Length: 150
Image (cartoon, rainbow, N blue to C red; front, side, top):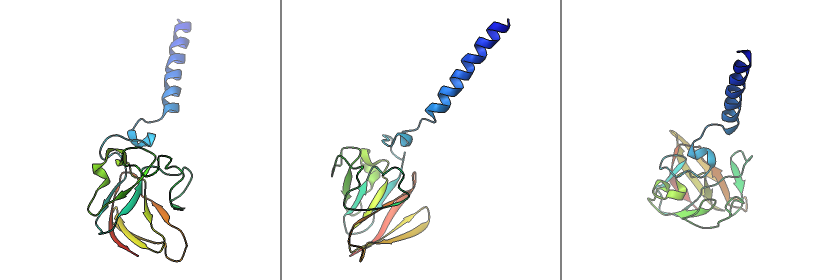
């Protein structure tokens, strides 16, 4: 009797440990979600092209300087994960399956970009810094680019 109780306890413990190690399973957790609305979304309400990326640099808090994030190993590509793309006027990343979880917006060198996210406006400037900058957007939030001037 005691032996079967010990075996059941071991099985339950093993199941709990494997569940805890695996963590929650959601598409956005993997960084490559395939369900519309599973991650960050960008709507471009300007007349300019806005570059977005569907990856982010782990450990980076929110700003990255440079032309292309090092995680974008597939380069300029609408149809791949780990890439970046030029979002045209009035386009929404929600309409592109590989960008259902958009992670960042690029502000080109010499420009200022404003976007609203979760009811707050954010303005980022790359004027006078000699480089493009990428701004992380929050997961599961729609960011609407409202102004982009160079």
